[in-house]
Length: 527
Ligand code: C2E
Ligand code: MG
Ligand code: MG
Image (cartoon, rainbow, N blue to C red; front, top):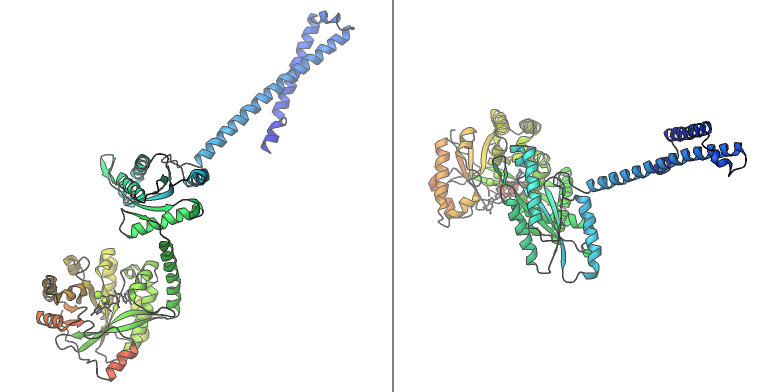
């Protein structure tokens, strides 16, 4: 269309044509006046005819010059257009920052390589290496985008050098690079190349006097024809890389079909969990907490269980992390707390209920109000509720955690620091926030019976609690030896399979009615 337009005469070009023909006319007139065409009279019979012949000649000459100039201009325009098109197509296939190929060009080279290989593939193997930078985000945040760009360019150059000759390298999005590599058939070649790439990226990059360090995690996938479409190959490498990230970064993983299955299973779990929360398939189980040394039940810890229609009863380790990552934990906790309050409000009224609150929930606005609303709605007294939090919540947002805890404590809710000894075990956290209870993690309690040195730490935690005016609960008591030792050290409460496993409401009530659980008023220490 554009070419046709360019090939026809435009108004400017018609003007040129007329001007040149007029110029021809003028030359003819001048020639007639000067008698320059007399020599033609001998050739063409008749004076008039020779003048007319020359008029035609000069006007034709003007038209000819006009058309030659048009064709020259047309050729130049076509050449410029072709150059611009070639430049645009190159730009569309390259990453402007590093000058490397981009995703589009990489896919084209992958397909081209597959086509050219089919005849002479021999024992060689075509693989893609997806290289994702570790700790790149903080570089942008700490030093700014310019530093980030410098790191990406340096990484691009180093990767090019570290790859075997004949490989193609491209930058995908952000801090992701991808390489197409042909190796021999031995499996170790992949590991060698991946380690080389990681080492190349991990060396510090000097930028304006700073030594900036990033790392790399590499996902490797087969890129031969049998591996499916280019998109499928990239997806497989991405899954392998994701596995590497989960396994601790700075490493490489080769794609296995199981990774895809795990991811699909995880997606299914997410969908099922949403339905489970909506349909109330998540239910509270209750594990007794006893006072030491008498072992009278003073309350229960509420532990979530999923009564899955096909998979049976699922433990929290299967679904709580998913609920936390997907943001469903708020709804799940509301469901559990409401049901637990309804279950326990008719139990002897000195029995405490301890509920776990996930760190992510402290980031939600209105957590304290939500808990208060459930207490009001169910008629469960705030003084009988204890919330268990872990130090992760404090680390993530100390001020939000403090605000929520203060509101809850002002209502009479008690606060326990759960799993003490596993995470940060920070005195700073104990000083900054006002807790009512320390729960010693079961990994320490387990070790008591084995005479492990960690028993000394349990003793230290109990004494620390005492000196700060906090009561202590030991989790995971499974044998009499641990029970006796903890009682002697002055631990206030105990929880563990020795006293009872987490059980459904009906079982708690059966055990009460048969006198298997001995409730008594807890001996709460003055804080
Ligand atoms: P946790 O809060 O530290 O709960 C104690 C865990 O120790 C429970 O595991 C309990 O069954 C287990 N346990 C108690 N006594 C013994 C024992 O003598 N031996 C052994 N081996 N284990 C014992 P569970 O129920 O699997 O819960 C695991 C974690 O899941 C809990 O640790 C808690 O962090 C989380 N969780 C459970 N329910 C909820 C919930 O409703 N909301 C939130 N946010 N987290 C929950
Ligand atoms: Mg707990
Ligand atoms: Mg715990």
